Amino acid sequence: VKASHGSVRAHNERLVFATVFDSGQVSRADVARATGLTRPTVSDVMSTLLERGLVQEVGRGPSTGGKAPILLRVPADARHIVVVHLGEFAFRGAVLNLRGEVLTDVEVPAEDLYGEEALENVRDLVRRLVATADRPLVGIGVGVPGLANTDTGTIIESVNLGWRDLPLGPMLQESHGLPVYVANDGQATALAEHVFGGRRTENLFVVTVGRGIGAGVVLDRVLYQGDGWGAGEIGHTVVVDDGVECRCGNRGCLETVASSRAIFQSLSDGPPESPRRSLATTLEAFSSGDSKVRQVVLEAGRQLGAALAGVIGALDIHRIVLTGPVTAFGSAWLDALRESMASRALQRLSGQTTVELGVLGEDAVLLGASALLLTRELGLKLPPAAPENASSPSPDLALTAAGRPGQGGARRSEN
Ligand SMILES: [Zn+2]
Image (cartoon, rainbow, N blue to C red):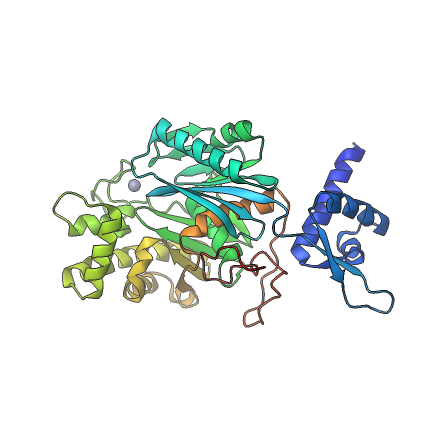
């Protein structure tokens, strides 16, 4: 069936836009070469994109003989993105620009939010963010604890939030008339570390260790979500027979021995404190050399290392990144984890695997949700991995290069 004129036009617009975005600055002639479209088609499509403010002319590039070509680029604020992270302590939402810079952010305390009440808070948060946006929005991205089907926007199951088969994406889509993408928070974090983190590698395994433990997998530079959307769900694999009861209903899951919850529970005999306070006091005791605390924390690291040995055997990914509150225990915890991992995996494989700490901090899930929108909704490709030791790319060249050279938490920069 021959594609209709309208859909060809839309396809060309998307292609030209993605090419300009991914190139940083580019001439019409180079876009024609890169896309295989004719020069008149590119000029025509570019006029439309200029009219809509999706691209802008930024002066002339170097001449290659004839008249110097006019260069075009996508302004960072051409479109904005609404993203939400349904975190352990808070629901955090933000409006980002196309470079992942945080323009507005809002936080709602969420430790006790559950079920219908949690849903109402999410809807309210999104409403507030959409209302503050002063540019057209690409869409809404949501990072959720639990299993989430990114294709349908359904939360398959979130134990924390008490949600099951909740069509969150379609609900938000109906309210705001915008595309909505939902993803598991660990998977979103992995995508964020891949796109906005330090160095770019083809494959990546990212583990978030907080009250829960989740992970995400990037294979060949694409987020791999699994056949049932559960890729990276390592926290609820049983590692201790008849162990401590887990919030998933099972006993002895990895979360019951390696998460912050597990650490605090083994150290406390009184009623549970607020997790934030527990982390601060435990960290202090850990750094001052409290032997009981050190023993518990390092054992938690060893348990996680043992689980990662299994990951090495299954995937042979050479770069593992750890993020989340528990990484605050730093190098001693990390060394215990590495040793345990190395002693349990094939040496030829584990010897080539690096384990490092993530660089994005609390913004990771928000950035991952935005990366999901940029790649799926706008068709933007991820720029190719820079060879290691390469000089840093020009700031306009890539999503990664822009604004977030690795020290997370960057706000809108001067330009
Ligand atoms: Zn469990």
